[in-house]
Image (cartoon, rainbow, N blue to C red; front, side, top):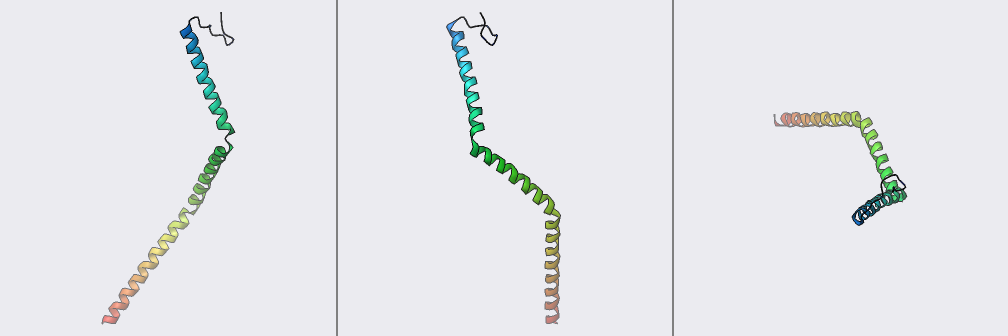
Length: 94
């Protein structure tokens, strides 16, 4: 005799227990999947996190040259000021 899904029906009690345990495991997996689909808050958090990552990536990718140029400008200005101060001190000491 076969089960509705085409597999042979278990004959012994141990086979029945194994089939029941397998069915319970399948049902537990199905319930977890359904619960995950119905968890609106978690889904919204995942989508928001993905969106934030994409925005962060685009903003940083687009501004990297600007940030590097600004950093170079700051370094150049700081070096010039330092050189000007040294020259002023040297002139004052002479």
